[in-house]
Length: 141
Image 1 (cartoon, one colour):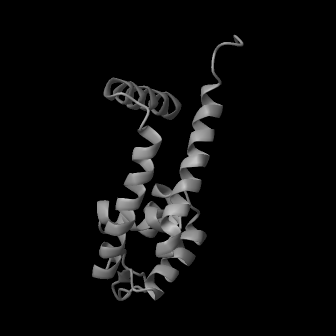
Image 2 (cartoon, rainbow, N blue to C red):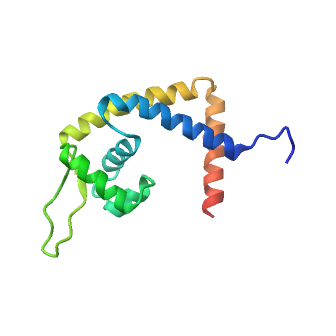
């Protein structure tokens, strides 16, 4: 690798780490972690998603998701239907309180993202999104 060529993987990881730190700071006053925010966001985006799908969507284990969903249930931010006759719990859904908190959290997360992207021109942002999608698709293949 040329010494002038950036180590893109390292730069992506560094940006991801800093983004997470700033998101955690922004969400802390709401008593939300980035993982909890991601869970609430996924439930809004994909109502009826199963706990296993929710875990995959938020990069968590099924066990960790179960614990987190219980915490969100206890806070009244999500609700679950009663278990079916077979004993299986139905998927979680946002409560009105969960949707309200998510809206406030989204505003704070948007501010963090705007700060992160503030040095980019619109054409830079378009190129960045295009390039990252190419990277994602190449690794999925």
